[in-house]
Length: 342
Image (cartoon, rainbow, N blue to C red; front, side, top):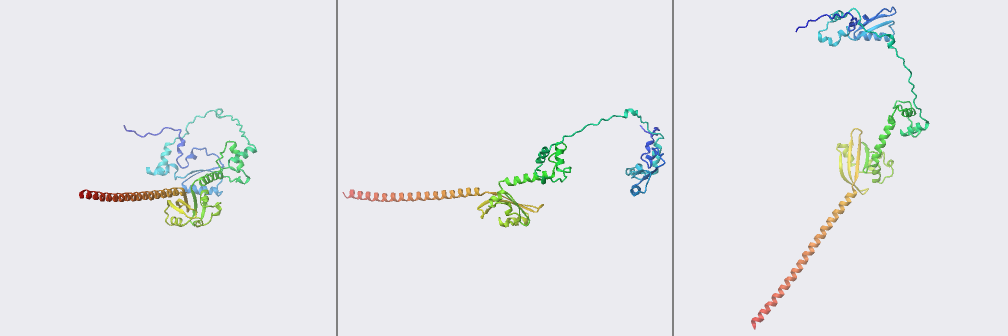
């Protein structure tokens, strides 16, 4: 089957001029004498026209702009088809009809619709309700109301009202989320059974938890914060980790000053330049192990003594048996001789 091209006979297709320069103007009724109707194509020409417009040099102009030279028929994809600006325009000109597409327009009355106002009265919270919502956001004092605007409202009170009206959520508060995260982190840190100490690269104490305070007989974190770690611990392991970058894991160390055995883990955080030390108190385990070792030594010593005593008893018995046998032999010899003499 061979298909031969035929001309589109649709005469009511004047808007097919759209992809050419000035094509939109051709489909318009450009009959306002107060306006000059201008077609501009090409990126540079469009930029120049806009700059002229911005500078106030243009008045009473209706401008049709096309970024592509020659409008759409001169677009970048057309290069694949060996673009020829004149031939492209002529093809569109031949393809477009003289009249407009027929569009059935409904009666004007059918396009009308009456819109009644929808009353929207949002509930207004009382002062006590606003205060309660602020408390849920951890804002119990006036200075807690930072009014930072990170939630999108001008003030914390406006945010509380929006929460009451269902337009916002309590968690949509940056200080609240930061405080919550810090509080969770602090609770975990202070309730872990392991001692945790954080140092900077200068080996100064930046953070210390409650378990570490108890282990080192300290009352308050402020007693050591900002101080060199040498005040409370031997810094040699920290220096080694900082210099080599190799972490220490579960190294058993005896803290003579505190009479404690600990399993020490030191990690170097390269991103924040911190040294994190976690110490697990294993003093009870060491005491139990020492007791077992002492009991084992005592058991061995007792066994040695029992064996030695048994050997001594055996030797004494053997000695006694030897003496008795000798005496018996002598008596029998004498008896034998006396019988022989008779």
